[in-house]
Length: 98
Image 1: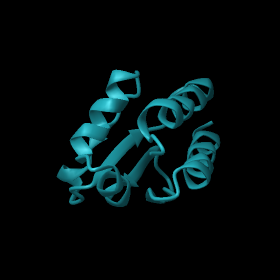
Image 2: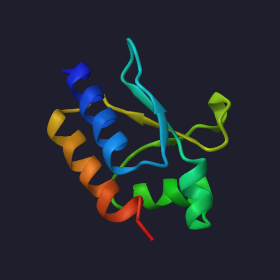
Image 3: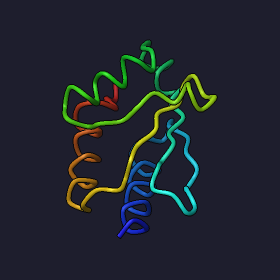
Image 4: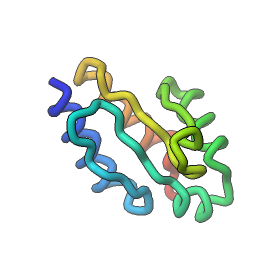
């Protein structure tokens, strides 16, 4: 199940959020997004982006404690239906194309 979630989220982000960098995790359920280009293009901070996610029910956390001030960590150890829903919410409400 975890590999299905990781693969789905990774492919979705690569397809829809071209200016978000990420590495496909191996042996873990935590996806790490590097959002510097997206934030700078939108004139927002990573904290603004994190807040947008929380506001629409996507629980994720700041990546600064993991040595990336523009990073966001996403836990994918949830039912697959929630990963699909989270990706849709991110596309519609958080990673806005402006």
